[in-house]
Every structure is written in C-alpha cells, then in structure tokens.
Amino acid sequence: MKKQKLLRDELANLTERIWSAVHGAPCGSGSGDGLGKCSVNDMLSVLKATCSVGVDDDFAPLPKRPSEYFDIALGALRKSDNSPSEEEGMLRLIFEMGKALSLLGEWDDAISYFEKVSSGAKTCGDRKMEADTLREIGRINRRRERWADALGKYSKSKRIYEEIGDRAGVASASNCIGAVYFEQGELDSAKEHYEHALKAALELGDSKLVAQLSNNLAAIANVRGEHMKAVSLYEKALPEFSEIEDMRGKAEVYHNIGMSYADMGEWVKAGEFYEKSLQISRKEGDLELISNTYLNKAELCMKLYEWSAARLYCTKALEAFGSLGDRLGMGEAYKLLGLVADSQGEWELSTSYFENAIRIDEECGCLLNLAETCMDYGLACARRDENEQGRE
Image 1 (spheres, rainbow, N blue to C red):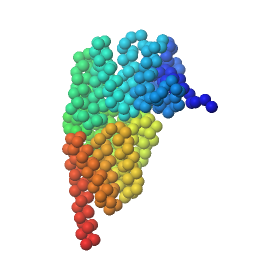
Image 2: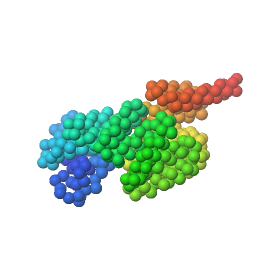
Image 3: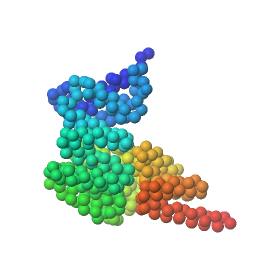
C-alpha cells in the first residue's frame, strides 16, 4: 500500500496558498479568482496539515518545526517560475510567514524571520516594511512581558510611520504602545495612546482598528470598576468585528464581556460569554485567547465551588501557556492551582504551586502579580493554621 501523499506535494500546495495570501491570486494567475481570498488562517491550516502527513525517503529526517516547512517552501518557491520578480515581493512573503509563526507561538523563529525582513527592507529602502517588522517584533516582546523591548520597537516603528506620513501605521503603533502601558497598570498613559489612535482610526475609516480600540478602552473602564460602561463599549465593538469578519477580534470581545460580568458577580452570564469566546477561538486556533479563557473559566468554577472543573481548567491553561512560552500566564495558572489545592486540604501540593507562581512572578519582574500571589498564599497559610488549631 502506498504511503500518504508525499510531503513535496503538500509543500507545493502550501507554497500556492502562501503566494495567494500575499498577492491575492493563485501562483501564475493574472486574476483574483480561485484562491484570491486565501488568508493567513488558510495558510496556517495547510501548514498544520503538512505537519501531519507522511514523508518519503527523500525528506529524511522529517522536519519538526513549522519554520522548517516554511524554509523548504521558500526554497522551492525561489527555484520555481512563480518566485516574486522583485526582492520586495519575497520580503512580504517572509513577513507573512513570520506573522503565521507568531500566531503559532513559535516566537523565536518568528523573530528570526522578521529580522531577515528588517535587514532586507533597509537594503531596499522600504521604510514601511521596516516599520511593520519592528511593530511585529514589538508584539512578540509584549507577549513575552519584555516591556522595555516592546516599547522600544513600537516607538521606533511609530517614528518611521510619522516620517513617511503613514497615518494608519502611526495609529496602529499608538494602539500597541497603549497596550504595553495597560498591561503594566499605567491606565492614564494607556488611555491617552488609545484615544489618540482612535481619533486617527475614525478619520481614516479603519473599522478594524476602531473596533480594537473600542475593545481596549472598554478594558480600561472594566479595570476601573465601570463594568456596565465596559459592557456597553464592548457591545459597540462587536458589530464592527462582525462587519470585517474578524473572528479573533469577536472572540476577544466575548471573552472580555464575560470578564465584566464576572467582576459584577453574574457568574452564569460570564460563563455564557466565555463559552462563546471559546467556540470561536478553538476554531481559529487562537491559543493565547484559549489559554486566558481557560484561566477565567477556572476562576468562575472556583466561585461556584466546582473544584474538579476548576482544577481541570487550570491544568489546561497551564499547558496552553506553556506551549506559548507565556511565563506570567503560567504563574497565574500555578496560583489558581494553589488555591484549588488549598480548598481541598492538599497543603503540600498547594505550597508547591504557590512557590512556582512566586518564582515566576519574581523572574518576570511583575510586582503586581507577585503582590497578589503573596497575598493569596498568605491567606491560604492563615486558613491552614486555623484548621490545624481546630483539629487540636
């Protein structure tokens, strides 16, 4: 019996779809028909299929990382008649591959691809491409909680956009800078950058960015305890995301609405919106949002004293954060696992989880998370003392 479809055939398919994702048309096609609407998501689905097929002897050893498949696809494309005629075309192709790797959580490989693009963009004098690449590297640094590096890349990206008169790029970079300030708890600075970006996005008619910024401003309102204002802002963002068919954005809004209802103690509503978010994020393969939603569902189950379910969601979140290399997310999952174990009288296990959480928070330099973890651990220790005294 013959082996599964050969890897080279899958790579040809992958290359075809990569090309269409960048150029909006199939390889060798002069029109936008056929694969004209192929997106990065389509490209990712083909990549995932590629990674699961059989391989013939000519491809030993089997590539293990997604970037290795992209490397092979790039090599095949360079040798084919369909290779971009200009260096800028190849740079854009590698840039889209970097974005795909970033979505898959392959951050080191993604940065390697982006750095190739950045170097090539400088050589070609393509300043927009250089700014775009700096912004994407900044996003990866932000997800890794490397705040100073993220701000540095975003700020440099914004300066280049300003110099070349790219107002959309300036707005996008301002939004990214606001996100860094938000995640560090500097809400006034975050709001200032979000509002500056929103004004530009509205003037430009950029529906996607308007939706993202409405979502971000709602998050600030929620942190400040203005929960119904936050829900109202989130609900305004939903039709925008639906109109532009941004399912990831829609999933994030559902997730955030769930968080607002959870903060108001409306657990059933919160759970409903978390589920809506998960249905989309699982379909889209958005591991970052999936992991955060698992964590929130774990907290929800703890509020309802559903300890087995809480432990399950904590474990799922820990695994997902681990796959992403998200250390702070892992710390949060360990903290919740510590609380779950504490509620069940599993003192040694609880201590182990809390110590892991504290170690991670210290290593990441996140003082807010560290303070919250230490407080929860202290309260857990106090409860243990009370229980031991009661037994005596």
